[in-house]
Image (cartoon, rainbow, N blue to C red; front, side):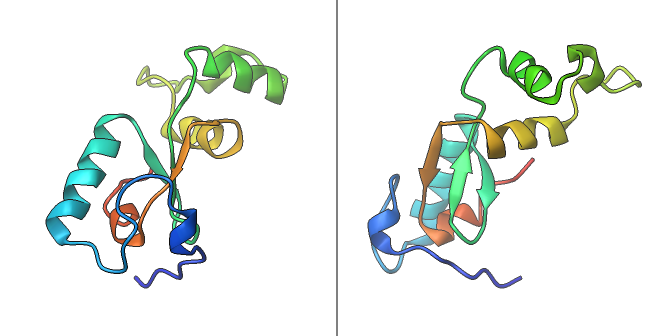
Length: 109
C-alpha cells in the first residue's frame, strides 16, 4: 500500500524531523506512541490522536443526541472501536504529526 504524504517536515510535531529515519528509531517512536494510547487517524497528513478525556462517551452521546448505552455492543464486549475512532477523529485535541515512516507502524482503531 502506497502512502501519499501531504505534509512537509516543518509540520512534524513529534519525533525526528529528517528525510530518512532509521527503522529502529521509527519502531521505537511508534511503540512509545502506541503505549501512550495514540492511534493513526490520517495516513496522508501523518496524524495520530488519542482519547483526551475521561468522559468522552458522554461528549459523544451529547453530540449524537443519544444515550451512553447506545455505544455498548449487545454481546457484552464493551464500547466498539468505531466509536473510539470517531471521537478521536472529530473531537480529540490531543494530536501529533509524525514522520511518515513512523505513522505507518502505528495501528488504527
